[in-house]
Amino acid sequence: MRLVRSFAVFCALALAALLMGGGPLPAPFSGAQPVLAATTLKAQFFLPKGHPLSKHLEQIYADIEKATNGEVKIQSFYASELVPLRQALDGLSNGTLDILVGPGNYYSGKIALGDISIMPLNFKHYTDRARAFYNEGIGKILNKVYSKHGIEVVAPYNYFTGEVVIVRKGVSVNSLADLKGLKLRVAGGELVQLVKALGAEPVFIAPPELYTGLQRGTVDGAIFPSNDLVLLKLHEVSSTVLLPDYIFSGPMMHFFMFNKAAFDGLSAANRQAIEKVLHQAALQDDRNSEGQLVAPFQAKAEAAGVKYVTLSAADIAASKAATDAARNAYIKYNTEQGNGAEAHQILNILDRLTAR
Image (cartoon, rainbow, N blue to C red; front, side, top):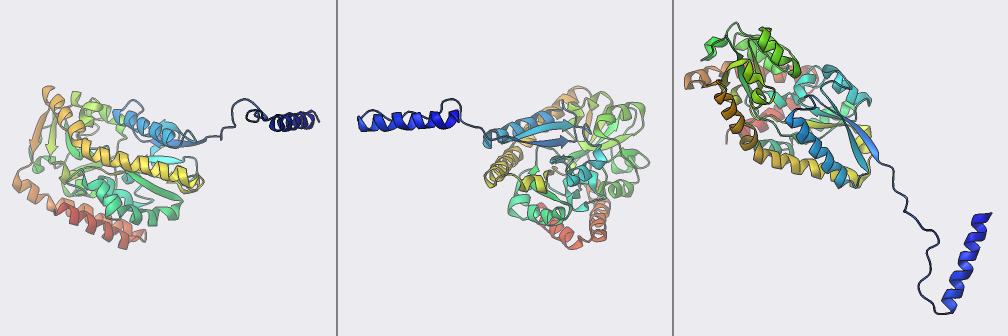
């Protein structure tokens, strides 16, 4: 009742001011205007929180919050903090997670199409990753399959190098032949077949556990991002890095994957803002990855005594059988999941880019 009386008084004063030719009408209520409630999305990244790539990801999240005027906020989790690594895709599908950032290979048993993240001969050039996703249609092909699981692949996360073979101290490797019989850590998927074809034994160890694995000899080496040799202090327990990276996995394309219901539940303006931020980040990272993440870290590792060995031309030619085994496995896994046609489409795109 008081509100009605106050409003009546306001109207009377306003009318009087208008009739007397006074200034502008007074505002009926003072104070801050109402602010829309923010939507908080739970996001998990597969690396530890202190990793520089995790810090880079935090900046992207901050850019998203700014681009959406604070209407979308990101709550960050790392290295199985909310959902165990191998179950993270299920967590994304059922809504335990709203965002999952990482390689498709960890979830190969569910959706093998994303295994192009870490696969031999996927990309030779860093700048091919965003081009493949956006311009060549890989993003649309992926979403055709991921959407069946309630997941939207919104963008690539390209702040990654290629993968090399990191060899522990006490083991000498100078050629492909020297890999025979070694236990090599792999992320899963087709790299398992690559390692077998090289005559080595594939082993899975989560990234945070690799230092101890190399130190104790649980594994003799790892197919792993070259920059992580220093970032995860693996140079302290390693003797050799075997190149070139594209044989084992070229520059990696990981994904920003969203729970589809959570993404669709955002306003159209906020979805577009997120897509724009992530697209710009992918392009920027394509340009900067090699200069920021390869050369400086190789220099640091070499200064610490790690030897970099480039395979001979004969060994690179001989590696074709191993890379073919991985790519054949990609077709096989996806055919078994009913996505063989999409797998062929993606390999055709990769081959076209690699042949340039």
